Length: 309
Image 1 (cartoon, helix red, strand yellow):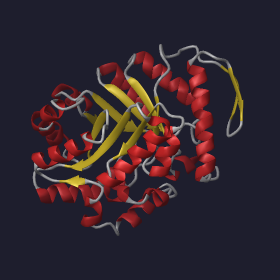
Image 2 (cartoon, one colour; image 1 turned 60 degrees about the vertical axis):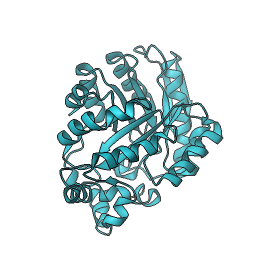
Image 3 (spheres, helix red, strand yellow; image 1 turned 90 degrees about the horizontal axis):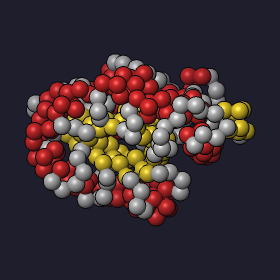
Image 4 (cartoon, helix red, strand yellow; image 1 turned 90 degrees about the vertical axis):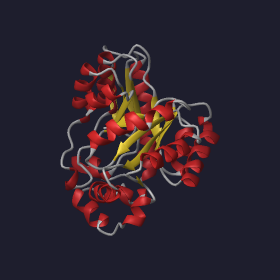
């Protein structure tokens, strides 16, 4: 799919660093760093990774992996750091920390990663331990560390330390408040990316059915979702999600012009990049049709949209 997206005219990809899928219907959940290395060696697309660098993974190892990836794809790699989800982070058997404790650990991880990329020998004691660590394969320039945020409160916190913002599509008034909170807290002028959740298929019925099958577990409130640690738990909660609730979070349509109009609304909020995430399984149709009919008018108004893996 990455090759198809590149050949169709998309410019960038992003992926999420998961251990488990959200539901068994999603089928697979491969190792993001391995996949990204293979992609970097074969494609010219820029690549972003949304990752939690301090719970199941040590920040020094994440910094090393990202630096190596940047050597495979110089200048094409960025990271977005988040406080994690129990779905991925509880596999080590360690206690699931409070949001405040995870935020503190993330701040420490971001600082350590930046210092390692600058060539420092780093010792650290706090949320994690690090002794005498130094990276010998480093990026030419420190990699951008965006902050992942969905709520106003998280966006305000991210604005105080991150190099930019990555968020997800939500009802426009909600998303506007997220953007305003980020900018007011120190994010003004920093890059802002949004992952646009959509479902495009051959018919309205297929678009809705595909979205309900693949993505109904992903519209749960963040305060609930981040504490669930097994796909089966997400599936149980998703059974209560109906089409109306899904449509509040995913733009469902078989009409390309409706998708275009919606994406132009997102453009109006000032995002530097829009990552298009078709949540159903009709990926070939989505890539080809959007490349032909949606990307050209979007490009006439701003930076080109991108694709989500």
